[in-house]
Length: 299
Image 1 (spheres, rainbow, N blue to C red):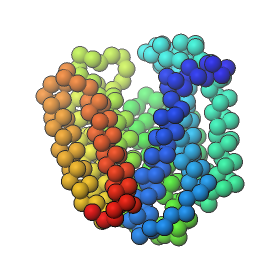
Image 2: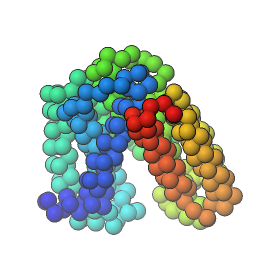
Image 3: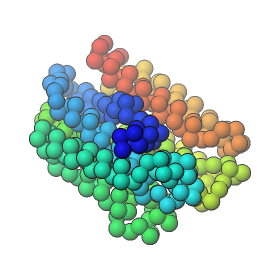
């Protein structure tokens, strides 16, 4: 079983990079909230580690839940993946994720100040896993799946924000908290749509947004969401680092140009590659803003 799990995680959810990603997601939202609220002295302890681990654990559960939900479809379209190929058994990942969820819930119950928001997060995840009890409606509709499933990123953001708000006694409702709730939601939305946009000659029986709405309209949609995404980031860094504002705008101009190129010739490159590069740059700039402020103060 352990060997099979190693195969699964190597191909579908590499542990070390995803642990690092969980820590980055937590750190970005946590510190951007505190810095914008004027907190300059941080009491870092086991709670911060558990919060970051919860992000990693929850995203791992979503990965496994998606693979289990899409098993029949993957058997037809992606037979080389670990579960459809038979190299990994569904029972293996089910046992693993059950243990992982139990550990995460127990840690949150014992150590965290926002256990209610942990339950909210995992309740939403559970509803996703059972298609909100509307499998036959949602599974057949790509837009409905997006509307019901993608807000989970915002719920996870709120879990992190609630921890910071309770621990440091800062206002729960503020412009910066609202923007922070959206700050990783929009990139997740952009990526989810972009990975299902293809050039006309690359379409298969797999349902994509470009097949439903055309690749130009689909790219126009993610372009609008990208502008909203950058707007949230500009508000969050406005009082912290003016250089970051310039770099974020440069990143926006670059990705808009690449979107234009894709609409002119969709055969040049997959648009999801552009979105991934944009997201990496954007999130690195947000981390840079936090680190720069902690070291040098306002720039």
